[in-house]
Length: 253
Image (cartoon, rainbow, N blue to C red; front, side, top):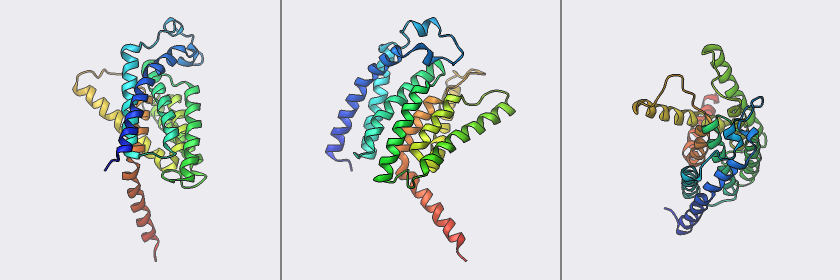
């Protein structure tokens, strides 16, 4: 049962999120054009003119998405020290989603910010709740695992399908998020993001909007999966506990 204070706080944060939506739009219009294209690519006229995202409707949509994320996460997780970095994390994830969805680019600057926020979250989680980080080395393992898994999948795609499966921006983003989620939950994040992508693809097929050879940027799906992983952690942890108990039983003589 949700407390009144929790609902009020969630509502206040939802309003904050809605206000931040248009601000994020302005940020994306003001950042250097080079951030939104490949290293060896010359920025297009659209990128140079600083009118990349219109506040109506894009800024309004971004505000609605951020408001929903703040409200639902606050209701599910409640208030704790961990929620402070989550507030900032969602802002950068929204910036990443918008840039990747339109230009198929995840700016390194946003990824670095996510990495810093992830480290702050990991320290707070380790010192208080230990929901995701239970050992000092788990952020390191999570970052390595997030990087390695996507790199291996990308190499597999290159060998089998002769095309990249993931952009290098996705690989770096997963490494940054691995600091926050640790070894176990970065794998959960990867599974959930794949499921979100699959659901969206199936929707496009049934809606008759799927086109052959179309490229789906993975960044938005990963960002959605972050919120889902945070909110589903209490449901997923018993599965890990059950697996650990079964492994300990198998080890008995």
